[in-house]
Length: 204
Image (cartoon, rainbow, N blue to C red; front, side, top):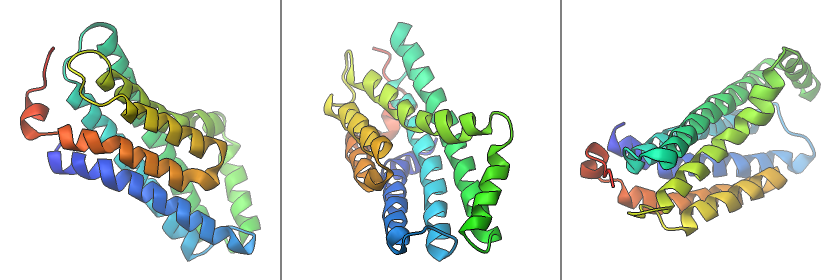
């Protein structure tokens, strides 16, 4: 993956998730959310942010290099989880964008959501387990990078990812804070991701 895109994903991914969280809070000030410009703009930001978080997982995996044994398996699983989570979250956001554009009111949006979620497996893949993988992937990869020798990320980096995930998972209103935690967690990764290291990762 291009180094510029990778570094962009470390900053723009969390920033767009933060933007979605802030827009979501503002959209709910009148007691209801969507449809409308705020709903659409927020979920477009959410969609792009999720895809960039998946790209960040690719960068973290490349930074890990050809790890052997359990750490290599864990890094591969973290990448797979992050990519699947990005895809699931992007699908959910795309449905939200469509519902906001197609429905005339909140009740109409609810009908679209009910129709989509009525398909077998959709609720599990797109609304529960799938999106959780978006945050689990970076945590696993961050743990691999912070463990062993050489230590490619500080220990506090995956810890911040866990804190951010807990904040967002326990209350979606805290998503901006959770996204800020991920932004901080990615700062060392962005600094460590050099073209030479990305092209010829350490095998130690």
